[in-house]
Image 1: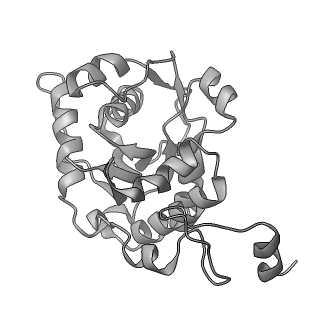
Image 2: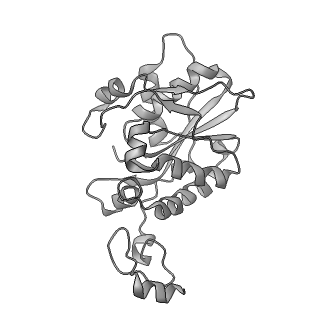
Image 3: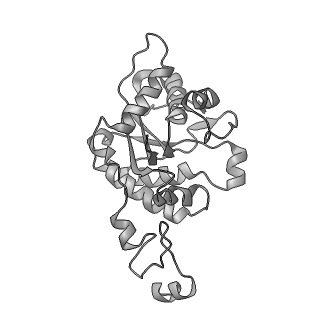
Length: 239
């Protein structure tokens, strides 16, 4: 079935503004595609997201334990008043896996061209608790991680981390409450026979960094300081 006929039978709409899409448009109309709120964090080893992530890591760092600056990057800015928030929401809440994969591939291509992520050799999604994954039917972080790994040309291991317990929603919690809520929630399933050198943690949206920090320290606890750990997300909440 041609795209034109398919659009006639099953009209596609822009994720952001709702306008009917043309034959050559994918997920976004040309106007929204031109206005995508890119963060460009992948172009700078030290950037707003990375600084916020490292500040979160510092709050959890055991006394005297060394910590390298962790790289972090995100594709898009997220703001609750901005209609572009519908892009990550389409994946997380509406089951639009095709759109999620499309924008994850955009993120992956940018990371693949960024020197800080050039030596990543394993991509690991933030895991969902089994009960939440069963209810939703998929892990949105894994959808993103698979596309990022494909762009980087490295493996993606969705079973590397496990979620020990189901945590309450983080949405309405402040930064300190998020840290307390998520502390100790993750663990490495099994120490790999050949430890990776640089792991890229992937999630859908970066807010305070608490969830990624909990994953970071779960990996650090299991593998020590021989592995570098970075982070990437589809979107980041504007501070």
